[in-house]
Image (cartoon, rainbow, N blue to C red):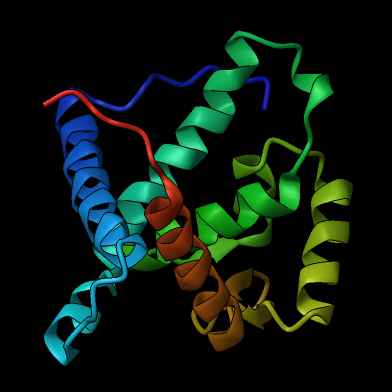
Amino acid sequence: MGQQTSLPLPAEFKEVCDLVRGLGRRGADLEAGASLDEESERALSFNDDDLAVVAASIYRLRFQRANQFDPTLFGEPAWDMLLDLFIQRVKGKRVSTTGLCLGADVPHSTGLRHIERLCEEGILRRSAAKDDKRLILIELTPKGLRLMRDYLTNAVAQLKVQLPQ
């Protein structure tokens, strides 16, 4: 987490703000006890592209935090890996073990320990690349994908921050 990254670009920030505003309105309706019809319930579910924008913002902010605080104060490589895998899945990109460790900014041995634990929990799976058997790819399992979708949807719905118009 020692590398510096830039804050979201204005277009990305606007997209996240619009998404959060919409979620805030939906959450307020739910808190007010409004009954939801089937169409409204479907509107509460977000597509993976929307959730990837949220995940990418969380990911960037976690790395940006290193500019304000000593990075050794915080450490959540498994979470960084899950965010990265979700984002890359939506982009249609495959992720190698080495790439995942680099993305989480952890030594390879540390990354492998976290990958192993997440595999044991049924959240990630390893597979050999079809075009290069030396390359080990990591991906979210259906369970891992469901957990990430649920978390990101619930996280955004919990935001109660009034954003500027």
